[in-house]
Image 1 (cartoon, rainbow, N blue to C red):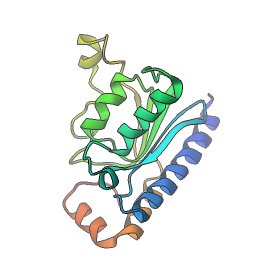
Image 2 (cartoon, rainbow, N blue to C red; image 1 turned 180 degrees about the vertical axis):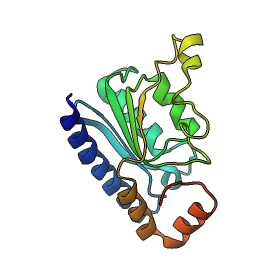
Image 3 (cartoon, rainbow, N blue to C red; image 1 turned 120 degrees about the horizontal axis):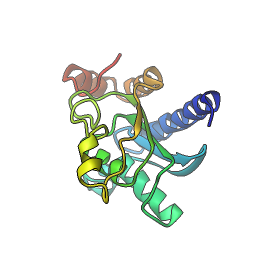
Image 4 (cartoon, rainbow, N blue to C red; image 1 turned 135 degrees about the vertical axis):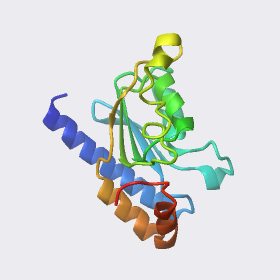
Length: 174
């Protein structure tokens, strides 16, 4: 895709991701959401399911990856982009690498828990060098895309929780 199409697609997908996160927040989840798409076509989209399913592993990114694999009938998500309202944590970053997702676009950085900014799972060339049968090349990572819009959604969802999260340094940006 050319740059203009990519930017338009990124804006459309992230706006949808923020909309999903808002709905998840209204349903009793923390407002995290993720979308997996290929060539501008959504393969899977979801919100966090941690509270609803009582399972701490049901982060939006992991659920979206699982749904995308089922939708395409296989493990390889090469050529796909994962959109997330918040930087994927390390637990979510390993499946991103293992499924060979090509791009990761997130809105709000997480300097305390991020799989890119703190733990560097998304950039670690050693994973693919030493275990190429399991881990693909590091994906392109686009940080802070529509950060202000996602932060506004979090702030509106729960100003007190947003303030505490920011004060503790879990999320970066304003």
